[in-house]
Length: 86
Image (cartoon, rainbow, N blue to C red; front, side, top):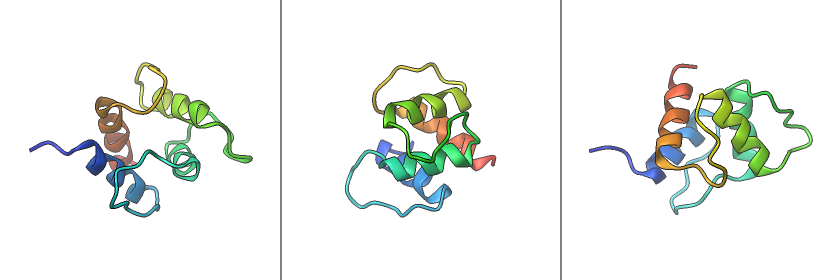
């Protein structure tokens, strides 16, 4: 069975040293900044930029078209795969 969106978000959080969340929630700015740093995204994380800017940088880092808004499942799978190979 393929992982759910919540499973993928938690895998990504844990891969960058954040904590797993029991409830279904989107990424916080801090979690997105941690993902950006782990993937060496082309965005400065200090001070913390807007979520949309960090999501766009993450999408570029994993070579996914920028659809805007929250990550879709396929995008989360690409991010998780990239972090597994880091």
